[in-house]
Image: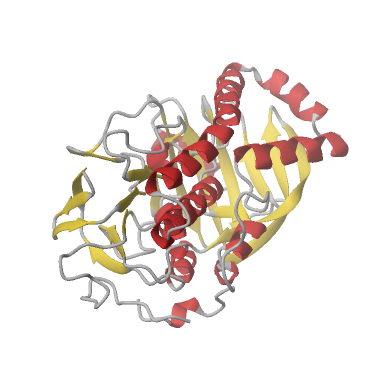
Length: 382
């Protein structure tokens, strides 16, 4: 396994003029996925916080995604079923592929161990023409990848011009609830409007949260009320905005700024699933950039490849936006009817398959899995 630099340390991989092969702004799922595809190149990874210390997600992904990214070591619990609760009824669906809940820190460290990136603990303040300005100084590269999250990065700095956002908050508690095995989703208007609640078992603990696409909903009291159903009180919370509308995958001013993950709006509407898509698109982006750096394709062809992939999936993303709007106004009885119809196993399997492949499935042949699995990544000095 190649050596990796310590966070915020100097490195011989920096060229004399301060230029890198690629700069990645953001060190969570998307940024790390890009970095794994650029191993052996001069890569700078910029994040405000130490990698893996700022969780905002509920951290549930397909087992296949964990296998493809070498992060199985971060698994907390494997889930073969999803349960949807609405209007007093429960519907269980056998998942085509198991999902796993993962430890965020362990997951990020396992991905980081597969990179050669230099890490700057700094805030990226602006980008223009291949130059990223940060609170630590400026850096340049022929390829810059914006994986900075929902605000994204512009010439003037992080952008707040976001088409549509959902919001989520959750707490993780050291208990096991008396619920059936699987990932639990609660689509009930009496819990939260224009959203849902969830219960995700994570080994010795459980993550319980709520989200809404209505920014007028105060999620703190909603979470407290939902926890009260189980006789629980919230502990420390995490969460944040969920950008569910796609944005431009490449900056149009100079063609050097690739945009991935939440910065590109690659968070699926309705379910607000974002990790799988972030990794799917980011790995593809990283491979395109690597091909351009190695010479088989040009920079413009790398850009075209990534944009084409995002556009191929955009139609399904738009469909999910419409479905999100319809489900939000559905009365609970209508949701029961819909869920009962698709509960028929052959139909449920087909619906799940369409959803996974329509939104970016890591085993669909578009990209292949990366490298050997890292089973002891936490021993690295990061």
